[in-house]
Length: 188
Length: 188
DNA sequence: CTGTAATTTCAGTAATTACTGAAACTACAG
DNA sequence: CTGTAGTTTCAGTAATTACTGAAATTACAG
Image (tube, rainbow over all chains, first blue to last red):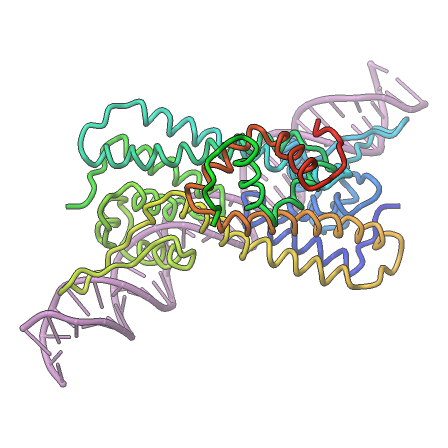
């Protein structure tokens, strides 16, 4: 007995559909994923077809995409051929996967493009200036990447700790200065 | 004399065009912005029309969009009506604006949708489970929001400090435990 | 004011992306 | 093996999004 689409659950699914379409993910794939996340039991393709009112083949393609993002797990029931899908039980696992996948698809290629352009000798003043900007971008993106990779390693418990620290970020920086012997600039 | 589109600069513009189209931003708007970022001098709409080979009206629309994201600054030259546009000189300013704008457009509406759904009484077991997932999402997203808001406050100098800290995130958590009296769990 | 150089708007069209149904394929129970 | 319940693929079509040129509007120099 798959999940019932009450108005509350519907609203949530529709909202994530809209949001999905603002990212690279298309509307129905967003809806499919919301459905899986909100469902306690794993769902089969036909469940989704029915729940979302889209064609079976569309579901198949969406599932393929979600698999390529490693956002869903495939399961079988003994003695049945049918395939069932589910989302990770921990929302932080989902977020980590999203962060990692976006990094692979967007950040890494950008870093490598920038790197390639930066090894060329600037041929004129315009290129010199442009390379300067590219260098700054490369540096910033690389640092952000390092962070996200570090964050990947955290489990839910430590994530909570880190995030609750957020509101006192300034203190963290000061702490770091004191502990690791940095200079004593203010963080303001 | 506006920026010359050498192959190097072209490549960079094209790359950011492609990347832009994976986000909500469309290809030409991405290209326009890369062009502005790489150009030392502010550019007028006709410069962009010519450089990117797109119609004047398309440039006008793209500029409108970039303005709505607060990613470009409008400038005038004395005695000329023509408008010139430029990107912030500091890439971190750009990143901060992007983060803030995406928060406003994607995170905030999602938080408010989730909040609204969470105040309803669950009508059955499915809704109860679904609300639990929504609660987890809400909590996670809210914490991320707090972080990004905190990060908005940093200037480039402190950003550097924070990011270089990234690779020793674990240490930061331990530090926090010691300093603020948390429990002594490992961060592994 | 007036003329004009500039920007914006918008209806129409082009290009892209999403979706469907039918056919092809696959895995496996019997 | 064979039949069939299931999945995937794909060519065609629908829907959406992006782009253009022409017309309308705006800002301001003179």
